[in-house]
Amino acid sequence: MPELPDVEKARRDLDGWLLGAKIAAARCEDGYLLRPGSAPAFARSLTGRTVESVDRRGKWLRLGLDDGGRLFSHLGMTGEWVTLATDVRSQRAERARLDVVRRGRASSVRYLDTRRFGRLVVAKDEIAEWTSLGRDPLADGIEASWLREELTRRGRAVKDILMDQSVMAGIGNILATEALWIARVDPRSPGRALHARDVTGLVRGLRRAIDRELQDHGPRRAEGEGDFFVYGRAGEPCPRDGTRLTSVTIGGRTSVFCPTCQVRRR
DNA sequence: CGGCATGTTGCGCA
DNA sequence: TTGCGCAACATGCC
Image 1 (cartoon, chains in turn blue, green, brown):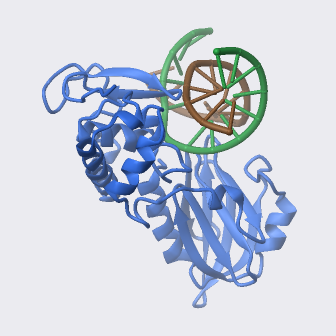
Image 2 (cartoon, rainbow, N blue to C red):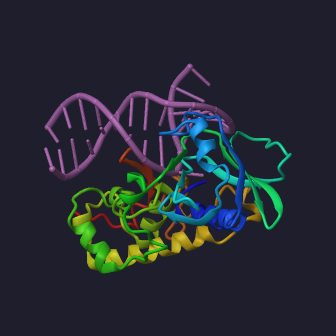
């Protein structure tokens, strides 16, 4: 699920469920998700608090509490927040729950995470994972001049730079793959080799890829097998020119691209 | 059984 | 110091 658009959707959900709500009970028995932290500290720090803000930066979420404390949440690979009635048990891997009361109505917000790569961190102040994040494409916007400077000062593969959370926050393998295809840039091209036009193309590509995922093309999402241009489609024809899509590994991640219309800069 | 997966971190080697 | 590659983390699905 989670790259920037999915995390933004989670933020909107949480904002709707939790803003102004008082936490009547909080539980997370999964010590592995609390890195750092512990089940007792989680319950103690959250119980009785009121949620005053719900923010997102890159792939991180942050709840601001009335005593100045915060709850940070990273969805990892399979994390998601849902809401259920207080007495309903989730069918899937539930790892934490916040039982809240808002305008006199009780509800329960649950954190589900099959693979448990996610994290929940309760802290008094900001945490380094949050403060060291780079520019957020949605919240801060991206300017071609800024991106060009970031790319041209690095020799690493452009796809690697796009996914560097300390440069730009929120871009993962899917968005980077899609944006590079839209911009017709080979993912292996060194950042500093890109032309000015490649960079403007990338800015547009990122925007399009993010907006596309932000749309709720919800109904037949399950069966439709994800409607990506090239992500997950190695071996299939390029939607633009029909060339067989190739895949390479960059920074340990599979990168699909069209060897014909995506230009490789040196 | 092996391979793969939307994420991050840490280690070892240029 | 920078830049990689790669294994590891925990779990499910082909």
